[in-house]
Length: 66
Image (cartoon, helix red, strand yellow):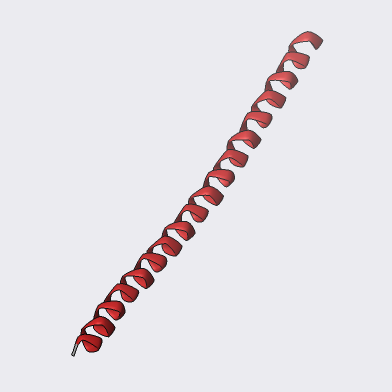
């Protein structure tokens, strides 16, 4: 009887560990997606800034030519 209680207790505790590991893996996957999304956003903003600088430089050159 005592062995059965110990086996049930260990099984229950083992199940909690699996759930915790699954939750951690899911959380890590979500963080990875957030990181990738952030990098994409950063690249897009950087590209737009570079385009703006190029446009400003081109307008400045055109203004100097007049």
